[in-house]
Amino acid sequence: MKLCMIGTGYVGLVSGVCFSDLGNDVICVDKDLKKINNLKKGIIPIYEPGLEELVLKNYKNKRLNFSTNLKESVKKSDIVFICVGTPTKKNSNSADLSQVYAAAKEISKSIKKFKIIINKSTVPVTTGDEIEKIISKKVNKKFFSVVSNPEFLREGEAIRDFIYPDRVVVGSNDSKSQRILKNLYSPLISKGAKFLSTKRRAAELIKYASNAFLATKITFINEISNLCEKTGIDIEDIAIGIGLDKRIGSRFLRAGPAYGGSCFPKDTKALVSTADKFKTNLSVVKSVIRSNDLRSDLLSKRVSLILNNKIKNKVVSFLGVTFKANTDDMRDSSSLKLIPFLSKKGAKIKYYDPTGSKKEFKKLKNVEFSNSIQESIKESDLVIIHTEWNDFKSINFKKFSKNKKLIIYDMRNIYSPKKIKKLGFKYFGIGR
Ligand code: UDX
Image (cartoon, rainbow, N blue to C red; front, side, top):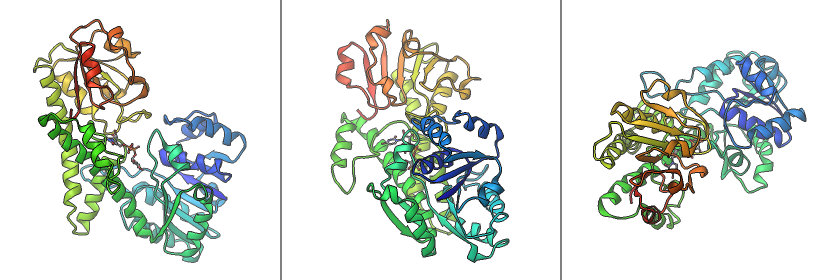
């Protein structure tokens, strides 16, 4: 099929490249000329394992192309995906939909024969209705169908999540586009993905409700971990114990720092804001947002306690600063609260991240990027393992650090407390 992806951010680029790998002709469109020229040269704007190889392969075999010309690209396509950003509005918690509506307006100028317009951007329920209204100002309704097809791609695992999704959700109010979409996704369905057809509004809400539920699960285990710390229980036992109940399931029960990233913080807020608009009180999701906001303060306090409230001039190493492993994304990472807190209190921070130094810390006092794990921890008083990169899973602390009183705060519970204590170092984890 001939597809066009509008927006070559995370969702548009990964989905476009994967669709082309499945044998479709795909044009990825973006306003940003530099980005498009770079993509043509195989320069990828984001860090995502496996993406570069797929871009190069499919660009070479001409199934994948890049363009800044939205009009021409839409004209050539049967299916048009809207994959633009829906950030949180300034001074409000609702989603800023201006890019989605601008894309819909542009698309409407190029529809001469039947096209399916798919919204993949994460949007509040009823946005599809608005897109339909915008397009129908220029185009007769029989020439287009607006569909919601949310993505469930995790950063760092996006390609695998695309190829082996748990489910593909297609929300459409007509059976013709459902049929075409089922056909488009048939290579994934034949590999075991469940295909769920719903009404358009339901698909929009499935996306937000999924993210809010996962954020709730994480926040729940994080709060239980606070109780574990007070009662001498290991949270890992609790996570296994409750996760074995099939009704609960074991995934997304890893206690750690506040959840971050480009989706959970933004989408939980937008969901509450939509519910408010419809005069519905989502009190559980509201508490999740508040609990997660407070979590970084709680962990900052814990760091102070670990250092006996003597933070000034202490060397603190951060291993990993992104919101999770296998991504270079800093959006809503809890390190953005923890590092400024420690810097303000006079600590000397040396951070190492496999994805390099971060502009977010450039202006902070006494915050320095280290080129390796060893360089980061060699003079350290306290090592904070903030992100669960594989690189941090078997560090030889004895070899890398000369400090016999080294303290390790393992915020991802990677290490066995017993083993670290055996080495003679002090160990703190989350909820243990
Ligand atoms: C998420 C959703 O998983 C994905 O389906 C959606 O489309 C986009 O948002 P992503 O933001 O890439 O994906 O990351 P995810 O792996 O879900 O992690 C989000 C945050 O939760 C991270 O900060 C991570 O560290 C944290 N997390 C996750 C935990 O603290 N514990 C867990 O058990 C799982």
